[in-house]
Length: 122
Image (cartoon, rainbow, N blue to C red; front, side, top):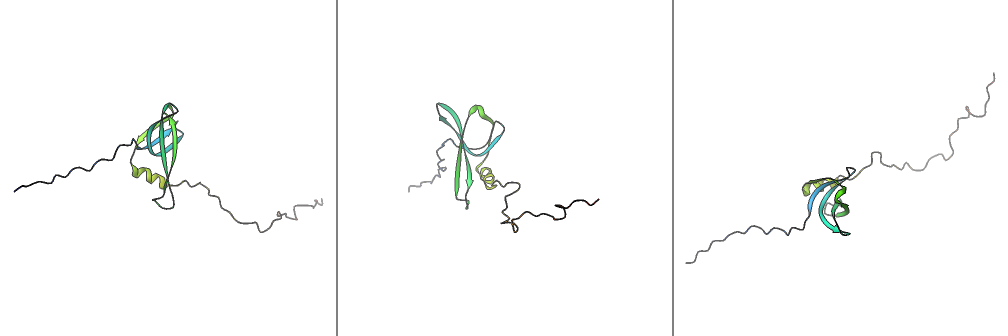
């Protein structure tokens, strides 16, 4: 009898393509949350960060790409995909949103007749 044991192999790790989930601050003034990696552009090493933007459904994701030179980086913090996507869910909403109140009922400016055209009778 030939007894053979089945040996489970660990799952094959995905090929490391250089992407890292990160929070990047540029000059301390701009902040990007996304996936990043180092790329060579214009003969120099640069940081590439792709920032996700969610569409109508969570499966509809578009990426906005930004490139920065190494001397521009103020802070680089590693994070995870869940944190990046949670940040993408919070779309920017202005403090006072624009509201269209429709056309004015009265096109003529309002004038109070008591204040105009009368002189004091002293």
